[in-house]
Length: 373
Image (cartoon, rainbow, N blue to C red; front, side, top):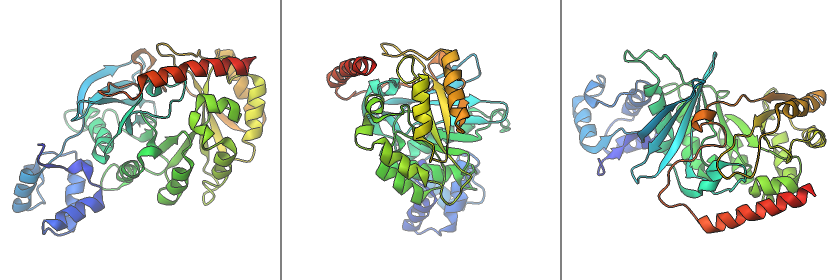
């Protein structure tokens, strides 16, 4: 298959252009696109409304292949995690979280991550490479097939997709935006703009472009009420600090006043969870149409941090609510298979700058100590 084209690497426009280059009519793209994504079909002979000559051409020149499953784990709470392997033997993870009224698929955009957020297991892994369009949408394609029964009736549905897996989505901009467009297409997965969410650490220029290119939901990994602390927890803050980020978030959904940016805030014991910091956070967000999602920290080996006590999380929440900020507390899911938020860490052939990252890790310890003095 190395000499054939993977059709998952095309959005509808790309597929139409490719078929036209072979002398085919543009309408064939919609037919093929629907067979691939809506029906999950890989056998060209079963694509009944496509002409026999085109089916023969597709068999000769193309294939349909998502990343390969290495392991599939099941947590006690119903969460599922897949370790997926790429053609170059790198691997990454995908997670499915079932709820009574929804099924959320957490999709990765990169192998590893280069942003070095100090509380994230993926960051400790380092960055290897971006995922292609086919490797991103292939996760959705694969999950839909894996979660359905033998008769094609979905026992577990993918009703929501969050770009919150491994990597910073906005540093792999074009494939991520194209993949989200496929997720929302009526001939593919048909998800509404409210059910596809992109989470970013705050890559401001790409956020501005994102606002123009798509209307999916937005989540910002905030995690601190001050630049001094966020510089440590989310180092990209040094380039795009809170004032600039939040000023932009004020108007992100200016055409849809009811929509709000989600502010993600991982709760770290003795680091960012004091009631004074809750009041600082409330003051910081008073002008921003947003809701805050408090996330219990999920530990991983050699981490610097501990999760805030449940009592402290609730007290922190109450301060925000009293200030009129919509605040929810995320329930930890999939912790027993390391599938919870911040725990994803696939296997990578070439981890970037291990020694340098270990040195940065030591500096974070020193900086946190100084902030607590």
